[in-house]
Amino acid sequence: MSNPRLELRHISKQYPAVKANDDVSLAVQPGEIHAILGENGAGKSTLMKIVFGAVQPDAGSIAVDGQPVTIRNPHEAKAQGIAMVFQHFSLFDTLTAAENVWLGLQSGETLAQVSERMRAKAEVYGLPVDPARPVHSLSVGERQRVEIMRALLAEPKILILDEPTSVLTPQAVQTLFLTLRQLAQEGCSILYISHKLDEIRELCHACTVMRAGLVTGVVDPRQESNASLSRLMIGAEPPQLVHREAALGKVALQVRQLSLEPDSAYGVPLRDVSLELRAGEVLGIAGVSGNGQQELLAALSGEDRRCAAGTLSLFGADIARAGPSKRLTLGLHFVPEERLGRGAVPMASLAQNTLLTRRESVNPLGWIDVDATRALAATLIERFKVKAGGPDAQAKSLSGGNLQKFIVGREIDAEPKVLIVAQPTWGVDVGAAAQIRAELLALRDAGCAVLVVSEELDELFELSDRLVVIARGKLSPQIATRDATALQIGQWMAGLFDSDSTRADRHAAA
Image (cartoon, rainbow, N blue to C red; front, side, top):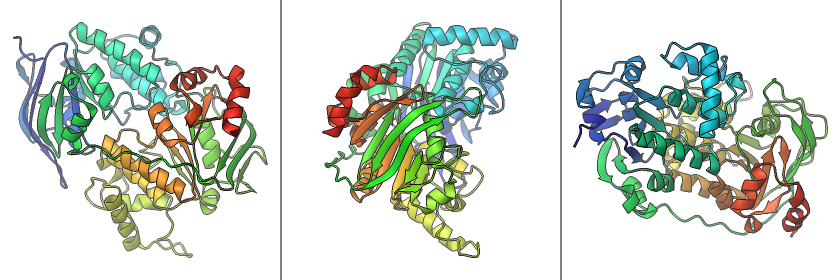
């Protein structure tokens, strides 16, 4: 047998509060798609950053094609043919998609050549990316496409993907899988981090399971079930979600004929958007990334206050021009899709980050009770099982899944009257996803009105009482989830819903 394409021997990495990797060894063969599976905080991302040179190990060695290598930084990793798609994006917001890709390549091509290659690859791989668009104007899903494109254009022999399908539609996931299988057939070795057990079983040839920084097993995922993989990962099967019939209350949030031009040349205009969200229900909004979700969320959260008077109301009060603070006072809480930089301040502690939306520890004169903020952060850490070095840990020190649990938990714990949440379980493991979804349903059962924007259809079908699709800035008819099918919602996501309006409205009314 030939030498492994990549071999890690006895890798260890200690951080002040946790040992992220503890004597980890694994081997990946040429052309193999190898999954790294583990719950949030198991050490997966740290291990991959060590391979990519972004983090230095305390002990252990790395070999590529049988030859020992020292990878001191990402530049040296790229020289070894290693490319990585990070879970937390590493893009410059003020540059275009093409400029970000161009800076990450070492090919000597011009910007125009890179732009042309991006267009060609986008068509082949089914990952539409406009090379000329500034990154700050892109949604999270579109930014992920840029990251994937940058890695693919490097023609790597080792490709690391950290939660690559978190915000891709089912159709885009299957297109990506075709690309990855083709790359593997051409000899590229792929390290694939995901919490989606179905994906791992469908795509991967081997799977290394990690827990608390240790390797707990290596299995062939094709021979495993979701239940057995879950037991290996978290020691148990995730609890079944109990979804009771909704007990509808009064109208909480109402949008009436909202039309809004984008505030940038690359945004999506909203056209005659109308919806009604009642207390005690979950309304799910599905859609392909970049179809107006970003603009709608900005309008609903108060970030964009250009809405015409009367188009937005909260419990009957006109909030079209109200800012986020006013809406928060009225009981509307919001979880953005972008965790670092929007949902949390990276350099601030978890205790300090509670102040973004929780004002219990601020007295009328503006003085902050520091002990109260730390106590609140400690409560959230315990309640939502967040793996962190305590209330004083910086937000950026948490794994993506653990930060997501903290941010979503911060808003759920506030007992809001209305909760708008984007991508609630992005990047979290199956156990944590089950907990977050159960907490959202418990919030609904307590009378909260919940609006969930997600690109995971399974999640929307599991959580929602009613569904609606956003496509090209327009909303589809609403439909009761029990009457919807994945095929129909998929067609609506392509904008094909006008002919179904009457039938869907009848279902929703029933």
